[in-house]
Length: 322
Image (cartoon, rainbow, N blue to C red; front, side, top):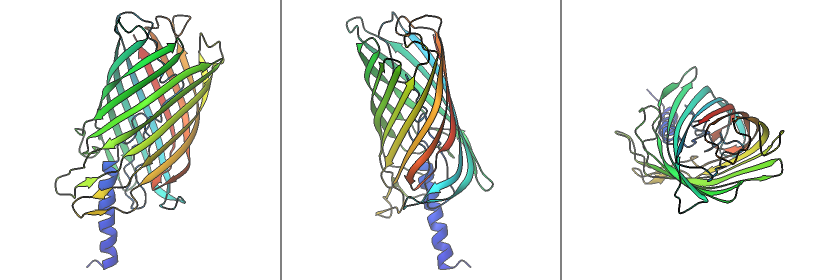
Protein backbone atom coordinates (compact mmCIF):
# COMPACT_ATOMS: atom_id res chain seq x y z
CA UNK A 1 0.00 0.00 0.00
CA UNK A 2 1.38 3.38 -1.01
CA UNK A 3 1.66 6.08 1.62
CA UNK A 4 0.31 9.60 0.86
CA UNK A 5 3.89 10.82 0.51
CA UNK A 6 4.70 8.08 -1.98
CA UNK A 7 1.56 8.87 -3.98
CA UNK A 8 2.56 12.54 -4.19
CA UNK A 9 6.00 11.55 -5.45
CA UNK A 10 4.53 9.26 -8.11
CA UNK A 11 2.06 11.92 -9.28
CA UNK A 12 4.83 14.50 -9.44
CA UNK A 13 7.05 12.13 -11.43
CA UNK A 14 4.27 11.39 -13.93
CA UNK A 15 3.62 15.09 -14.49
CA UNK A 16 7.34 15.78 -14.88
CA UNK A 17 7.67 13.04 -17.49
CA UNK A 18 4.90 14.67 -19.53
CA UNK A 19 6.61 18.05 -19.24
CA UNK A 20 9.92 16.54 -20.25
CA UNK A 21 8.39 15.09 -23.38
CA UNK A 22 6.64 18.38 -24.08
CA UNK A 23 9.95 20.25 -23.91
CA UNK A 24 12.08 17.58 -25.55
CA UNK A 25 12.74 19.46 -28.76
CA UNK A 26 13.12 23.04 -27.45
CA UNK A 27 16.53 23.21 -28.90
CA UNK A 28 16.96 22.99 -32.62
CA UNK A 29 20.40 23.23 -33.48
CA UNK A 30 21.62 22.82 -30.16
CA UNK A 31 19.53 21.17 -27.97
CA UNK A 32 20.64 18.64 -25.52
CA UNK A 33 17.03 17.45 -25.86
CA UNK A 34 17.14 15.48 -22.62
CA UNK A 35 14.30 13.44 -21.20
CA UNK A 36 14.69 13.58 -17.43
CA UNK A 37 13.22 11.04 -15.00
CA UNK A 38 13.34 13.54 -12.15
CA UNK A 39 10.82 15.99 -10.68
CA UNK A 40 12.98 19.03 -10.04
CA UNK A 41 14.48 19.77 -13.44
CA UNK A 42 13.31 19.96 -17.02
CA UNK A 43 14.91 19.18 -20.35
CA UNK A 44 18.08 21.14 -20.96
CA UNK A 45 19.08 22.62 -24.26
CA UNK A 46 19.16 26.12 -25.71
CA UNK A 47 17.72 26.62 -29.21
CA UNK A 48 20.40 27.09 -31.90
CA UNK A 49 23.25 26.39 -29.48
CA UNK A 50 25.16 24.67 -32.30
CA UNK A 51 25.64 28.06 -34.00
CA UNK A 52 29.21 28.97 -34.99
CA UNK A 53 30.74 32.05 -36.65
CA UNK A 54 29.13 32.82 -40.03
CA UNK A 55 26.05 30.75 -39.21
CA UNK A 56 23.92 33.66 -40.40
CA UNK A 57 26.26 34.97 -43.08
CA UNK A 58 24.63 34.75 -46.50
CA UNK A 59 25.65 36.28 -49.80
CA UNK A 60 23.19 37.54 -52.42
CA UNK A 61 25.94 37.57 -55.06
CA UNK A 62 25.07 34.34 -56.87
CA UNK A 63 23.24 33.24 -59.99
CA UNK A 64 20.47 30.68 -60.22
CA UNK A 65 19.95 28.49 -57.15
CA UNK A 66 22.04 26.30 -54.88
CA UNK A 67 21.60 23.84 -51.99
CA UNK A 68 23.23 22.73 -48.77
CA UNK A 69 23.06 19.81 -46.37
CA UNK A 70 24.06 20.05 -42.73
CA UNK A 71 24.50 17.48 -39.99
CA UNK A 72 24.68 18.35 -36.30
CA UNK A 73 25.96 15.83 -33.77
CA UNK A 74 25.52 16.66 -30.09
CA UNK A 75 26.43 14.88 -26.89
CA UNK A 76 25.50 16.06 -23.39
CA UNK A 77 26.34 14.44 -20.05
CA UNK A 78 23.39 15.10 -17.75
CA UNK A 79 25.15 14.52 -14.44
CA UNK A 80 24.24 17.87 -12.84
CA UNK A 81 21.08 20.01 -12.72
CA UNK A 82 19.82 23.36 -11.46
CA UNK A 83 16.95 23.26 -8.97
CA UNK A 84 14.16 25.84 -8.67
CA UNK A 85 16.47 28.14 -6.67
CA UNK A 86 19.34 27.99 -9.17
CA UNK A 87 21.46 25.70 -7.01
CA UNK A 88 23.34 22.79 -8.53
CA UNK A 89 22.10 19.34 -7.56
CA UNK A 90 22.65 15.81 -8.82
CA UNK A 91 21.26 15.23 -12.31
CA UNK A 92 19.78 12.08 -13.84
CA UNK A 93 23.17 10.79 -15.00
CA UNK A 94 21.96 10.14 -18.55
CA UNK A 95 23.87 10.68 -21.76
CA UNK A 96 21.96 12.36 -24.55
CA UNK A 97 22.87 12.13 -28.23
CA UNK A 98 21.14 14.28 -30.83
CA UNK A 99 21.50 14.45 -34.58
CA UNK A 100 19.96 17.25 -36.64
CA UNK A 101 19.83 16.65 -40.39
CA UNK A 102 18.99 19.74 -42.45
CA UNK A 103 18.45 20.27 -46.18
CA UNK A 104 18.27 23.87 -47.49
CA UNK A 105 17.44 25.28 -50.92
CA UNK A 106 18.53 28.86 -51.78
CA UNK A 107 17.26 31.26 -54.43
CA UNK A 108 16.91 34.96 -55.24
CA UNK A 109 14.82 37.33 -57.35
CA UNK A 110 16.48 39.46 -60.01
CA UNK A 111 14.32 42.40 -58.96
CA UNK A 112 15.87 42.25 -55.45
CA UNK A 113 19.63 42.10 -56.11
CA UNK A 114 20.71 42.32 -52.46
CA UNK A 115 18.10 39.92 -51.04
CA UNK A 116 18.13 36.13 -50.83
CA UNK A 117 15.77 33.41 -49.67
CA UNK A 118 15.95 29.82 -48.54
CA UNK A 119 13.58 27.04 -47.51
CA UNK A 120 14.55 24.12 -45.29
CA UNK A 121 13.54 21.01 -43.40
CA UNK A 122 15.31 19.74 -40.27
CA UNK A 123 14.81 16.22 -38.92
CA UNK A 124 16.09 15.45 -35.37
CA UNK A 125 17.39 12.06 -34.28
CA UNK A 126 17.38 11.60 -30.50
CA UNK A 127 18.84 9.05 -28.07
CA UNK A 128 18.87 9.42 -24.27
CA UNK A 129 20.38 6.58 -22.24
CA UNK A 130 20.76 6.11 -18.49
CA UNK A 131 20.88 3.30 -15.95
CA UNK A 132 17.14 3.57 -15.28
CA UNK A 133 15.83 5.37 -18.36
CA UNK A 134 16.19 5.41 -22.13
CA UNK A 135 14.34 6.89 -25.10
CA UNK A 136 15.15 7.17 -28.79
CA UNK A 137 13.59 7.91 -32.14
CA UNK A 138 13.00 10.51 -34.84
CA UNK A 139 11.97 13.85 -33.38
CA UNK A 140 9.48 16.41 -34.63
CA UNK A 141 10.70 18.02 -37.91
CA UNK A 142 10.96 21.76 -38.43
CA UNK A 143 9.87 23.24 -41.75
CA UNK A 144 10.31 26.85 -42.83
CA UNK A 145 12.77 29.29 -44.27
CA UNK A 146 14.33 32.73 -44.11
CA UNK A 147 14.99 35.93 -46.00
CA UNK A 148 18.20 37.95 -45.79
CA UNK A 149 19.49 41.32 -46.94
CA UNK A 150 23.08 42.36 -47.65
CA UNK A 151 23.54 46.12 -47.06
CA UNK A 152 27.25 45.47 -47.70
CA UNK A 153 28.96 42.37 -49.21
CA UNK A 154 30.05 40.98 -45.82
CA UNK A 155 27.03 42.15 -43.78
CA UNK A 156 23.86 40.10 -43.36
CA UNK A 157 20.54 41.01 -41.76
CA UNK A 158 17.55 38.69 -41.86
CA UNK A 159 14.45 37.04 -40.48
CA UNK A 160 13.51 33.37 -40.29
CA UNK A 161 10.49 31.33 -39.23
CA UNK A 162 9.86 27.61 -38.76
CA UNK A 163 6.95 25.42 -37.78
CA UNK A 164 7.64 22.33 -35.69
CA UNK A 165 5.24 19.54 -36.65
CA UNK A 166 4.50 16.96 -33.88
CA UNK A 167 4.79 13.78 -35.96
CA UNK A 168 7.95 12.29 -34.46
CA UNK A 169 8.38 8.97 -32.67
CA UNK A 170 6.01 8.86 -29.70
CA UNK A 171 8.75 8.54 -27.06
CA UNK A 172 10.52 11.70 -28.21
CA UNK A 173 7.74 13.76 -29.82
CA UNK A 174 6.66 17.00 -28.16
CA UNK A 175 3.04 16.36 -29.20
CA UNK A 176 2.91 20.16 -29.53
CA UNK A 177 2.72 22.45 -32.53
CA UNK A 178 5.18 25.31 -32.21
CA UNK A 179 6.32 28.37 -34.16
CA UNK A 180 9.99 29.48 -34.19
CA UNK A 181 10.55 33.13 -35.32
CA UNK A 182 13.90 34.93 -35.00
CA UNK A 183 16.06 37.71 -36.43
CA UNK A 184 19.77 37.45 -37.17
CA UNK A 185 22.85 39.55 -37.90
CA UNK A 186 26.35 38.72 -39.12
CA UNK A 187 29.25 41.04 -39.93
CA UNK A 188 33.03 41.24 -40.15
CA UNK A 189 35.13 43.77 -38.25
CA UNK A 190 38.59 43.20 -39.65
CA UNK A 191 39.51 39.64 -38.66
CA UNK A 192 36.60 39.44 -36.20
CA UNK A 193 33.25 37.88 -37.12
CA UNK A 194 30.16 38.67 -35.01
CA UNK A 195 27.16 36.38 -35.41
CA UNK A 196 23.93 37.04 -33.46
CA UNK A 197 20.49 35.41 -33.33
CA UNK A 198 17.53 36.58 -31.20
CA UNK A 199 14.28 34.66 -31.26
CA UNK A 200 11.70 32.55 -29.53
CA UNK A 201 9.46 29.50 -29.61
CA UNK A 202 5.68 29.97 -29.38
CA UNK A 203 3.98 26.73 -28.34
CA UNK A 204 0.46 25.42 -28.74
CA UNK A 205 -1.32 22.99 -26.43
CA UNK A 206 0.18 19.58 -25.69
CA UNK A 207 -2.33 16.80 -26.28
CA UNK A 208 -1.57 13.18 -25.41
CA UNK A 209 -4.17 10.43 -25.20
CA UNK A 210 -4.95 9.49 -21.61
CA UNK A 211 -2.97 12.39 -20.12
CA UNK A 212 -3.76 15.90 -18.95
CA UNK A 213 -3.86 18.67 -21.56
CA UNK A 214 -0.93 21.03 -21.02
CA UNK A 215 -0.06 24.51 -22.22
CA UNK A 216 3.76 24.70 -22.13
CA UNK A 217 5.36 28.12 -21.75
CA UNK A 218 7.00 30.00 -24.60
CA UNK A 219 10.77 30.37 -24.94
CA UNK A 220 13.02 33.39 -25.57
CA UNK A 221 16.63 32.78 -26.66
CA UNK A 222 19.80 34.69 -27.61
CA UNK A 223 22.83 33.15 -29.35
CA UNK A 224 26.08 35.09 -29.82
CA UNK A 225 29.29 33.93 -31.51
CA UNK A 226 32.49 35.96 -31.84
CA UNK A 227 35.25 34.45 -33.96
CA UNK A 228 38.71 35.49 -35.11
CA UNK A 229 39.96 34.48 -38.55
CA UNK A 230 43.59 33.40 -38.35
CA UNK A 231 43.99 33.80 -42.10
CA UNK A 232 42.87 36.94 -43.98
CA UNK A 233 39.11 37.48 -43.64
CA UNK A 234 38.64 37.36 -47.43
CA UNK A 235 39.89 33.74 -47.36
CA UNK A 236 39.08 32.30 -43.92
CA UNK A 237 40.20 28.80 -43.03
CA UNK A 238 40.38 28.38 -39.25
CA UNK A 239 38.23 30.62 -37.04
CA UNK A 240 38.52 30.02 -33.27
CA UNK A 241 35.48 31.40 -31.47
CA UNK A 242 33.72 31.90 -28.18
CA UNK A 243 29.99 31.79 -27.63
CA UNK A 244 27.29 32.82 -25.14
CA UNK A 245 23.76 31.38 -25.20
CA UNK A 246 20.71 32.09 -23.06
CA UNK A 247 17.15 30.81 -22.93
CA UNK A 248 14.17 31.60 -20.70
CA UNK A 249 11.02 29.46 -20.85
CA UNK A 250 7.69 30.09 -19.16
CA UNK A 251 5.97 27.55 -16.96
CA UNK A 252 3.40 24.95 -17.97
CA UNK A 253 -0.31 25.36 -17.24
CA UNK A 254 -2.33 22.18 -16.70
CA UNK A 255 -5.53 22.81 -18.64
CA UNK A 256 -7.24 19.68 -17.34
CA UNK A 257 -6.74 20.57 -13.68
CA UNK A 258 -6.88 24.32 -14.24
CA UNK A 259 -3.69 25.00 -12.29
CA UNK A 260 -0.09 25.93 -13.13
CA UNK A 261 2.42 23.11 -12.88
CA UNK A 262 5.07 23.84 -10.23
CA UNK A 263 8.75 24.27 -11.12
CA UNK A 264 8.20 24.13 -14.89
CA UNK A 265 9.57 27.54 -15.87
CA UNK A 266 13.26 27.38 -16.68
CA UNK A 267 16.24 29.44 -17.71
CA UNK A 268 19.84 28.70 -18.61
CA UNK A 269 22.98 30.57 -19.65
CA UNK A 270 25.96 28.80 -21.19
CA UNK A 271 29.42 29.73 -22.42
CA UNK A 272 31.50 27.82 -24.91
CA UNK A 273 34.52 27.79 -27.17
CA UNK A 274 35.33 26.08 -30.43
CA UNK A 275 36.83 26.36 -33.89
CA UNK A 276 35.31 26.57 -37.36
CA UNK A 277 37.16 25.20 -40.39
CA UNK A 278 36.21 26.20 -43.93
CA UNK A 279 37.28 24.42 -47.09
CA UNK A 280 36.61 26.52 -50.20
CA UNK A 281 37.80 26.14 -53.78
CA UNK A 282 37.43 29.87 -54.40
CA UNK A 283 39.63 32.56 -52.88
CA UNK A 284 36.86 34.92 -51.81
CA UNK A 285 34.08 33.91 -49.40
CA UNK A 286 31.53 36.42 -50.69
CA UNK A 287 31.75 35.87 -54.47
CA UNK A 288 29.93 33.04 -56.26
CA UNK A 289 30.48 30.63 -53.37
CA UNK A 290 28.46 27.68 -54.59
CA UNK A 291 30.55 24.70 -53.48
CA UNK A 292 32.46 24.45 -50.23
CA UNK A 293 32.43 22.71 -46.87
CA UNK A 294 32.39 23.80 -43.23
CA UNK A 295 33.20 21.86 -40.07
CA UNK A 296 32.93 23.19 -36.51
CA UNK A 297 33.43 21.67 -33.09
CA UNK A 298 32.73 23.34 -29.75
CA UNK A 299 32.38 22.66 -26.04
CA UNK A 300 29.62 24.29 -23.96
CA UNK A 301 28.97 24.47 -20.23
CA UNK A 302 26.24 26.09 -18.15
CA UNK A 303 27.12 29.01 -15.89
CA UNK A 304 23.66 29.52 -14.39
CA UNK A 305 20.16 28.14 -14.63
CA UNK A 306 16.93 27.06 -12.99
CA UNK A 307 14.81 23.93 -13.35
CA UNK A 308 17.05 22.39 -16.01
CA UNK A 309 19.93 20.01 -16.35
CA UNK A 310 23.33 21.61 -16.93
CA UNK A 311 24.68 21.80 -20.43
CA UNK A 312 28.00 19.96 -20.44
CA UNK A 313 28.63 18.71 -23.91
CA UNK A 314 30.34 18.60 -27.28
CA UNK A 315 28.69 19.97 -30.43
CA UNK A 316 29.88 19.11 -33.95
CA UNK A 317 28.46 20.63 -37.12
CA UNK A 318 29.28 19.83 -40.77
CA UNK A 319 27.89 21.54 -43.89
CA UNK A 320 28.28 20.93 -47.60
CA UNK A 321 27.15 23.52 -50.18
CA UNK A 322 26.71 22.86 -53.87
